[in-house]
Figure 1 (tube, rainbow, N blue to C red):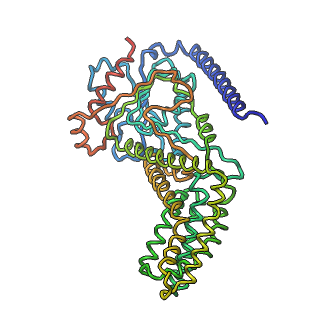
Figure 2: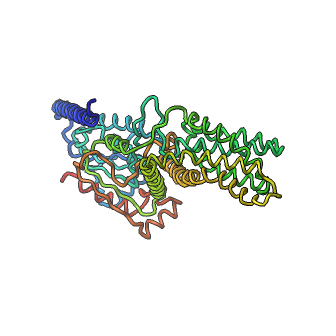
Length: 498
């Protein structure tokens, strides 16, 4: 069998060689284009073009006030021009960048990357702009879009003199390799969650039926298949896994409230039927073969690292940025859930065969004790309290540990997915078990950074806070900071040809 890692490395080298060849061809074409037009625009080389890219929910076409901050003549341009003598900005032009939708989704940003990449390419081959210098200033997810668009330009991106991002969380979505006939889930949640949730729900349904609470029995019988069904709907799968994790706790609390925790005979007797059904249907509810995530999957994700950006980057961020806080919290929750999952997976693979055989007998033994305790449930028997205790332990023990781990893992993961969906887009709900979302202060790349990148933290001054208060702006609206506007003015002036 050929070495898959070697093939992958060869493929990456081949792709890099192809990209390099296409980049050289594009540079050659640009050079030929400039030769054709160099006599038509004698003053164009003195012009400094500034391209502003707006962020999420900031599409100018949806604004009631025009121009918006990101348009020529908008608040940012006016503020920048006010911080220097007018004659210094005579050579500066703010370009009319086509707006993107501004929707908070990976799909919308992917489309924006394609549109902005075409715009940047057109700018370089525009006779009126090709001889000038170019700067890009982008806010929020507009920085994610602009970074990817510049990355797609390859060597042509070096035609841009500088790139500034304002409050941008550089987001990248990485999906693990998934064979066509398998469904990849988290090592603990994939196989056990539907089975455990189904077991507790069916146990309760049968118990309420035996106690002649038929409406409760029907309610739980219908609910029994809801969590596993939601797991199969891409946009609702995260909610389905969350229901799987909390169903055991809900079921036990519900039974205690409904029957006062006294009449356990029906519950214990129904557990055997429910266990047989759930153990048979549980894996089938996962819709196919279940493959546990392992160490090899992380290598696959590293191979999806993008190329570095061929433009000097300055990332300006502010402490307390609302979007950054949400992403940081989500990243922390993902780290905790993945760590717990990884420990569980390692423990699972290290279980000796003899312990595995012992565990395989634990559940049938527990169910047998459950049935015995249900049959010999007589208060007049001297040993009844011990049999009751054995029955209760038999019902809870095989499932309590698994349910507890599920609740912990999925609580973290569901919280992380909710926060990621708010900050990065609803696609975070599609496959939380097989997808990682990276949100970092600087863009990731699979190679060392070839161009200088700088991260600058900006602490709001009193003037900044006052300006935000007057405009009811969030800290995320960093383009409204007077201190940032003044800094951008000096940064732009440093690129004006002398």
